[in-house]
Image 1 (cartoon, rainbow, N blue to C red):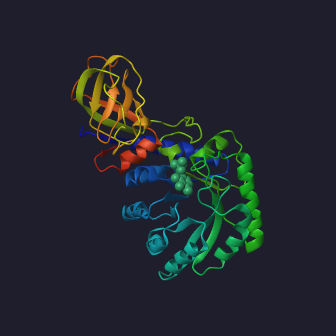
Image 2: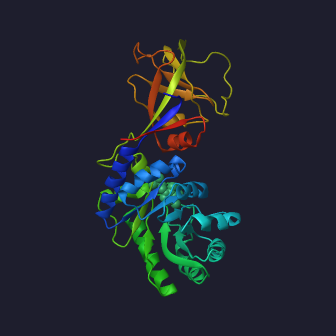
Image 3: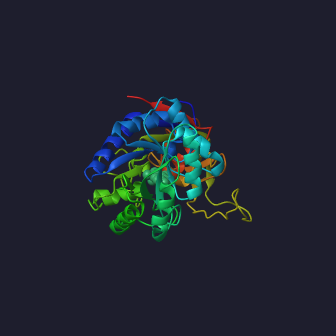
Length: 357
Ligand SMILES: *Cc1c(COP(=O)(O)O)cnc(C)c1O
């Protein structure tokens, strides 16, 4: 096994995609497959197609271009509005964009027209999380402006919660979105096809059966990739939480006092370390670091392993209770959370190993 590596169990992703998609269908929702956490890995995207998604979505133009080049012919959605300087590229590889600025919608429309096409836009509404989106009272006017742009088809509205402000998607928030939809339809004079309710943080609402009718879709990454909802990170019933496993090799194994010795200043990242005194312990250094992973997001698979810290290139684990089979050259495995996965899939130093059925 090449190390460090991340193994990807394609069958588990297919299973999660089908499971999540069925759950959505029971609340009248379609599944939009989000693949940005894997840097748009095309085989992961293909596995997600098992859930029959309405579209495949990503925040990066590069990832959607790679998806197109891998042979995908379905709808692509750009989750992060394109930079003004990249609207041409965006209109080339994507069918639909989530936007909140009229000027960006205009640039997308112009770029689409020059290719003899139209570009779909979903107007984003900020329901309180304070990342992207127009404030609710201003949405009808902005929608009207967007719907009259050449080359632009306003197909719906959407919202995104629990990303910056940590605002939990509740039934009230979804009802507020549906109210905005009605006001938009009055202002523009036609019906909207889509009400895009949010991300994996909306899954608890779905699981409780509290999603109001009228929301048409959820854009889901984490739920499919890690099998968890994004409010309390609980497992979605029937999903696998270990579709991704990280492997790293031990390069040093020495018993040392857990407390540093000397006058304490800052660590490599400018923080003053807070270290728990566990006495003298057997400690393993693994050849993977913060450049490749968020160490706080690693759950050890092996019994008796505790992650205690990391610098750029070294991960330090307490293996006092892990038994004698742990040696220099042993490979330890971990399940990553969202933050760890994001970095692992982006690091060129981590080998991506696709496990197929
Ligand atoms: C990342 C993202 C999603 C998907 O989020 P998950 O928590 O991975 O499901 C949905 N919508 C937008 C706008 C995003 O940026």
